[in-house]
Figure 1 (cartoon, rainbow, N blue to C red):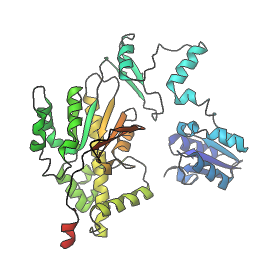
Figure 2: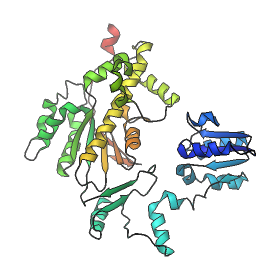
Figure 3: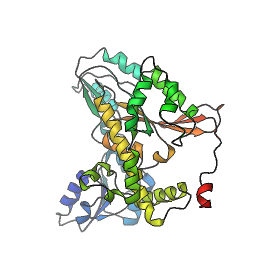
Length: 382
């Protein structure tokens, strides 16, 4: 019989390894699999976030049995869909999978059926968290309700909350300047001049001023994230190979390689540099882009870990649009600390009369347009 295993982690590797030992199994497929699984099964590309992609693959392979590994795939209702089509599949239905995918559902289920479980509260806002904490003694166990890759639990020793506003355009060596300007009684109006905002070619500070004001009003930390310019230049000129061997691992992305994404990124970088980069330089620029995102993600996580008495780890990520792309800063943060709640703010020059819009954890914050000369014009004349 032919067996299709959905997933790409250690759990799926164990399943594939055991299936290969069965005399009844003639062929094992794994989608998407990984380098280790490839030794025991034929690994195939599939979008595990898309039910259509999974069903299309199964329709082509016609496996005698499909086994589901990841919880994410179960939440799509893949078992329900395969069962409706009459395709054999092993795994819980979408409804049953809620016991694994939703901690609030599981708690309410156990309470409803009188299954012993610890005292709990379900909170949907910071205010609800603060109110609920009064009913608990420390240490407090905080769990993210949805999927968190096995890491959605924080055991806290106190009842305080931490948050941060992270700016990708600020390198770490500028942190003292930011801290001084944001201190009580200080004047944040001096920030543009002290950070050399215009000299560095950043958009008009007016666009960002409301975010600094927001941080001051709610006592949020401002975290300067970006990789130091000299290191960026070294990687951009020679790739990660330009760094000492012991230093390279700090900048390697932990995300699964994605060839299509890398090609899109290379095209975007080429366009951003006016199409004037030598083809040999583009891969080094891609390395630099990843290195910056990995560094910024690591510093966000470090800032949250250092924050005293973290109960609800969360971070508001403010980044340039280029770093919001797939494989960028939000994805790197999710890999390093899956329980971190992220709010991505997309600052756009559109019109000051428009109001911010919020969609799926992303704010589009319009601001006044600023006229700038064509950045490619001078380069094309050379």
